Length: 371
Ligand SMILES: *Cc1c(COP(=O)(O)O)cnc(C)c1O
Image 1: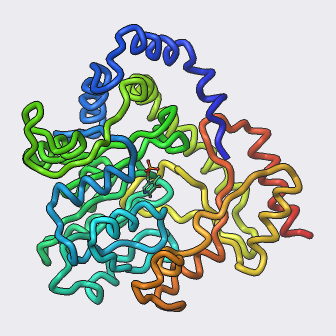
Image 2: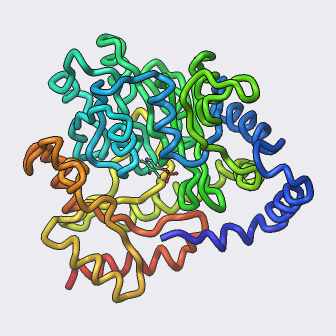
Image 3: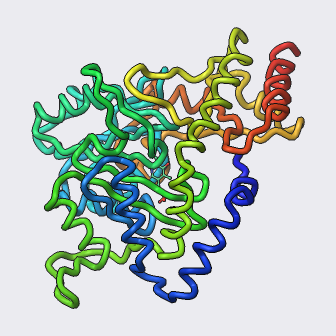
């Protein structure tokens, strides 16, 4: 699905020397590269504070801790996402409230927020799934009207542009009160291990988050909040500084592959290429087709036999996962997400795709629908 080794080889000299410098300095924790990476990512995103941490899941948890959400508070999110989004809500004793997604864009449907809000609702966590923004204009408007916090799960859309109707431009993850991202190796900006970060323009939230990721420490060995140990390794920061310089190129390469797929796979009956929302660029963390449910698994099998990997992100909506059954959502309660789980299929997309690979994949998809 990705070619991380091929990507590394193209920047090997830069990466290797960055790694060697960290080893020579032995500043493995909270080293210079971490501070520099935070500054550079803040500049790239045009945000005041970037707080690096251990992974994207921790970023989400720390965001909720920084907002001082209390056990029993309700947090609205989507059931069509990676488990981390809802896991941290649960771990903090908060109550996840699921709102269904739009079947075309896979992102939270703002029109369904009204019926989910109660007097215990404190926050909304939209997920910018597969590389494009959720409808942040509607979500922010709704949140403002109800006095709710917005935490953007931006693990899959770091660097995507949010393009509201007034003609302005903002980076995904910088629109809500806090944004969170992941540097898991397969993400668009991937480390050589785990990593994550939070973003905010709010000084006091930024300070609190920075303290929370380091045990809630303010002055050395003085603790004002109960925190966690979640730091980005200096080695990872050094690698990410190199890769950040290439991130826009990486996005462009993914977009080119996506555009090529769009054209070559258009017009196949029973198959829909991804829908692009008008208010966001799309950085194609995933290229996700919708296939008639009756043929999705067979297409996946067909491709596998031709040596082509494909993946189902995600096979089971979170409200129907065993661990979350006690929330009381039955089958049929969030129909768009449930249906998508039977229809989605993601094709390989990455920065090292070659024209002949794209052609081969497209040809095999066409063959399947002809057969
Ligand atoms: C990857 C991902 C996360 C979690 O990030 P980790 O760094 O793996 O902890 C959270 N939310 C979404 C939507 C993700 O894709």
